[in-house]
Length: 52
Image (cartoon, rainbow, N blue to C red; front, side):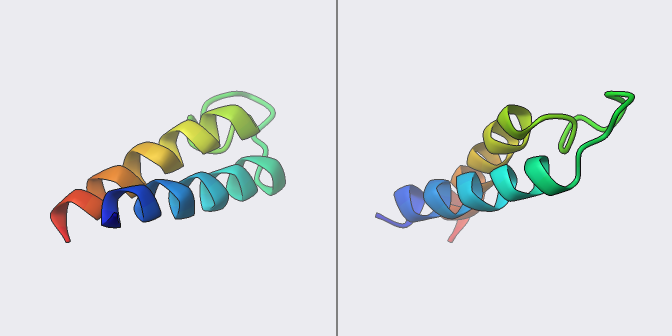
């Protein structure tokens, strides 16, 4: 349950970071697009959920 919650929170935060923190050059992988932000957020949320 914690890992699913971590994924959900990570997706939301990563999507927001990707939407509001767009990088025009593409050099910042976390915030270059909302999709990448969502994927990185989901991965980080999963890792955080597993370790807790």
